Image (spheres, rainbow, N blue to C red):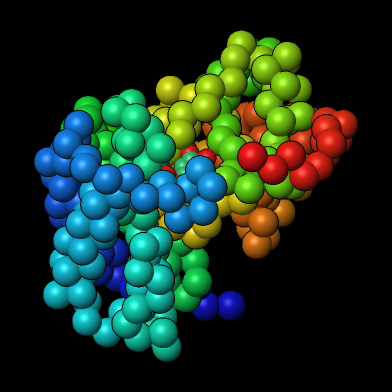
Length: 281
Ligand code: IPD
Ligand code: CA
Ligand code: CA
């Protein structure tokens, strides 16, 4: 079978990565400019916020990508599907990952940009405008933080690990809300963090600050860039059951590799907590 990347040269991949970086940093500058200065915060659905910073960050990211790659397809969180849907290239954009944090002036958010080639996440750039950290990777080119190589952690035992997770906006409406998993892993590890930016959570696994991450209900724009960066940093990214295919429910597991099978085995055992549903709000 021809690997789709065989038809995309290393130089091309580097160019895609450089433009993704330029776009992510431009989006990040918008996030800095509105920091602490939001006049209005809209709610798309209960708990799911959007601000002018999300919209303007997306606008500048789109303008850069469309100027360089007018024939590519785009999936952007706030604008939806744009461009050439027949193209083998699809950009997945989260212009502000961590809007809830941002709206509360909790400085943990990012701009996340991925390029999928023939449906496979192949380039990723995640920019944290608060720490001025840019996490980047392209398949076969390795992963970096501020241009220096990064690698996943060496932790081999869950009992010595620090994990991270998140909770989707439908968490009060579904039984499969990740509360049981959160309790379970909190009990058997050194701790579970809730970062509030899936892209940053993945970037932190990639650079070894965290040992593993799981979350359900993710969208392509949340996970695609981080997935490439974790893989290129030596980690493993799969569905909860260890399979390569990430199902629509977005049940993503990303680890340093050493903990992967242990986490797959634990996730298979966990049953939802016996809450009464739906909670409503
Ligand atoms: C959210 C963040 C959060 C995760 C949610 C995402 P948004 O993205 O990544 O960490 O738990 O599932 O939807 O809405 O801030 O772009
Ligand atoms: Ca997001
Ligand atoms: Ca977002």
